Amino acid sequence: MNFSANHPSVEAPASGRSLTAMIWLWLGLLGAPVAWVAQLLLSEPFAAYACYPYDVPLSAPILKNLPAVLIGINAGCFALAALSGFAVWRSRQRFGYVQPGEDRNRFLVKLSLLSSFIFIVAVIFNICAVFLVPPCRPWF
Image (cartoon, helix red, strand yellow):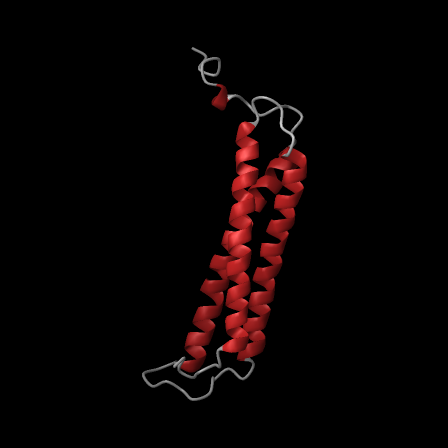
């Protein structure tokens, strides 16, 4: 029983689309959110431990190069988010003019454009926090 004749959404992708094009498409869709999550999961524990290693908060971080470590983590995450944005642009050029039956790819490109933009902005806001919030001091 062939269900693909009844449902065009389950058709195989066109043979002209290569595996690398699909990898760029998925990198564009998932790269920036993964970069933002990695930014939070890596920078927050360093900052928390440097300022509050035990029961008493410290007035200065125990890691002398904490700002450099945080800038390095944030730079790497921004690079991954920017690569994701480049992948979205490349996928948009590749899948921008789709043939009939390839609406799925066009939808994924539009979704990755939205996702990358939102998460690149979130990564930039987290980078601003490193420069605007002093380490080991209350925010108020």
